[in-house]
Length: 313
Image 1 (cartoon, rainbow, N blue to C red):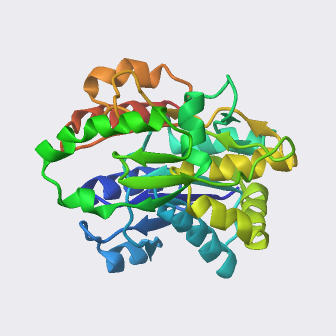
Image 2 (cartoon, rainbow, N blue to C red; image 1 turned 45 degrees about the horizontal axis):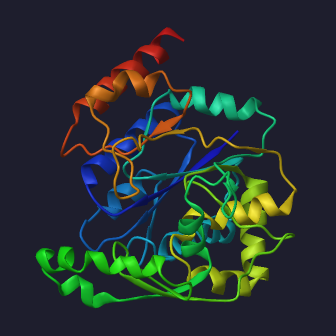
């Protein structure tokens, strides 16, 4: 069995290399693709390619944009164009890290009857992990960037924060200051036969799921065009295609550990050594987010734990 890792990165080269080394220590047969934004962080492409790692340059984007999904699709296209054989595609960011031995994760995948591990829920329903208003704001409006917010000083940005109240007073447009986007209500792509699903963008998919995902994207340009205009396409795109297909045995668990208990901006907290017990007691395969510029001890502890499990196996 062969695993492919597609890793989306944009910062902290040292942490990226650490993640790569952790994966390769267990299985050099794995294929690693780095989809990297070089805008603010350089990588040694020659060195990485000597290690058998493919580096794909991605265009700079910002939170909420379609660029994340486009980078994902570009990675899949590279696999197809180069006729890379694999069984599973694991999607990670540069701030993810395994919390179990890679060999144990791959052994689990070799035995499972599932075709995919991903979080999913109906966005426009009580089961949604977001409020109904938030789900509709994300996926029923067409957004454009309002880049002038970038030039504002922080004090002015905070001063206009109350403007968001207009999102609650009318149904036709939305202002998302955190994403620097302005949206106008559009005709919905969704109905009772084609449901909008949401969930984390971090997934583990069989090649069959990946091939279907790419084929659907190529054969339905209207779907791509619609999702180019939504906010946070990466938290709905994969789920909406795969769940609606009804072709696969999907596990509603993406095998990732996050902690949103302290978040106020929709992002998981940075995990530290204080979170170690909660991390390892979880049944996930990977955890996020880590930042070694703020706390490298947690990765040291995880490495020792993983190495001890490998040596005792």
